[in-house]
Length: 248
Length: 121
Image (cartoon, rainbow over all chains, first blue to last red; front, top):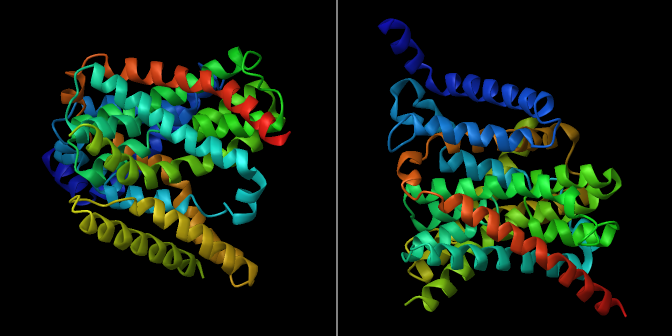
């Protein structure tokens, strides 16, 4: 038994690829069979990651030597590298297609989510600026939260909260969009673009719109894909700066 | 060659990080300010330029697309290495903020879309 463990630890990164692959595979099956694709597989997989982390220590599951490879695969360098790569395929002509209202809704979406997140966190008793900013960023998406938290040096438990907030947002957007599409006038390409820019969570926006009208998906996705990038740009910089001024 | 795409991505990432770190030093924030955002912006601009000149073949592009396909799996791994036990001492924080902030953003959509109509007229 011990030799097997030692052998696996020697190949920890490769083992991590296998573990995450299995998590993704099971999440896709659960999403399809149990929720009829209503809850995105990505949200299920990330939630599974958070649950696994609970069984570890202060470095999550990577505190267990067998799973030390997860820290390599999920470290901030790999995370930032893969996030930057998602910008490929988004072109300047696409930004022009989204137009002024797309850009306005993107900025408003990031600002408002951040403000709501910070205000609620403050009301719930968080008064540390790094914690407030990381939680506010988490209210944008489950990526903007941890990227911001790492950039400004927030603690891991706050980063975990920010991921959870982002995941809850992604699931809620998916589930609520078809239910309230009529109330918010979500039946035309323009509103779909505004919707993508305001909500931002790409997995939630695309899954939610697919349930309303598949023709609207590309319009929502168009603006939503820029949201995470804009959030990663604004939250650790301008918004962090403004929050610091406000609370000191 | 796939590595050309990966190298372009690496260049964008590194330049973005340098900019982010430099801004951090400039404002003495002791952190990286917007490095990921700058990296993405750079990849959009450079990718666009390179595509226009026809310098990027499918093979090179697939080197970048491979990494973007690993984005969610890497985020799953990232989630699994957080201090979730300590986070749970915060109780319902994540649920309350996640639900309320999302509903507030939903409520703003009709406002923005009527603003859009006014902008058009």
